[in-house]
Image 1: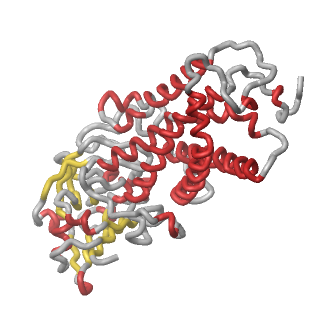
Image 2 (image 1 turned 60 degrees about the vertical axis):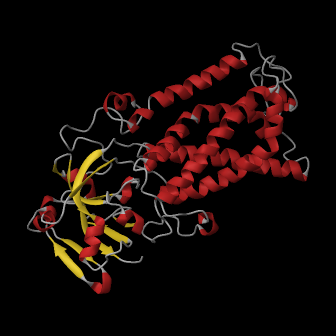
Image 3 (image 1 turned 45 degrees about the vertical axis):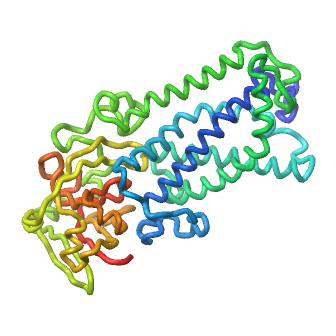
Length: 411
């Protein structure tokens, strides 16, 4: 028996073969394309070209060519795109691992390069495998709120996505015609071409290729069933046993819905949010500024909006009823009759997104509020008391909690 992984006879599984690999490849071709597009949309939703405080990837250069003003309609847009991105990514993990297992003999094949074209193919394969493992690993860690990255998740995942997708695209161009030819043999499972994937000395089969695909598909469905519920309320959320925001809602009452960051975690003390201490500073045109306490805000025209909360980790809530002052009315207080951009700053002193910028179209939307109440009662400390921003279709981190200052104007 050969002991070197570079020998074709070392790999004895009878499951490996072009047809099995091609089926997995076609699934990944469709799934990863959706992941890449929804990932780009998620990045655009942060408005990174609006203000440096929103831009977690300041050296993106041409990679930000597609950025656009993120819309506010429909209000569930980010809930949909990011929910698909994260849930699909998790569901594809068994497919990705099975695909890597199916082609592992090629990673050890000798000589490493038989020609320039073969060397380029091996290089693209290295970037593809490394990039795929990196993207899926960092994505899962972020979903699980395990921030153990050697830096910020945003630039790591963003740049990694471009490297991975470039290699994936090159590999797809090279291999899709062959994969389609192999799939024509779906009835008899006879391999076509690329004999290096077929063991010259296969072991006795214990499961068919279709059975192996069933196991992979079953694993994907299991992950889907145990994570997708975090995007819903009620009993469905309790099925998301593998997700941090699955299970029962955190408490009851009007404020009993999901959060990422508590007031205690953010270092927000009751003394600085009490009526005697807290003031909202609103600044606008020509340095005009007003200071408002909560009773003064309550004297302004109050409006209600039914809006969800949706976060980059893929979890979301259904519509909550928010009530407060429209952002465009606050802009008018400091001389901006036409809505403009705004920089929102929190009492939170440390951590990412303690400041966030919103575009003029977000300020202009009549549903965009500086919320004072949720579901008929005062905001709870964990939901941003005494005041927080809520904007339709915006990622959760841009809906700043514990607001202390708002600066309106061109950013």
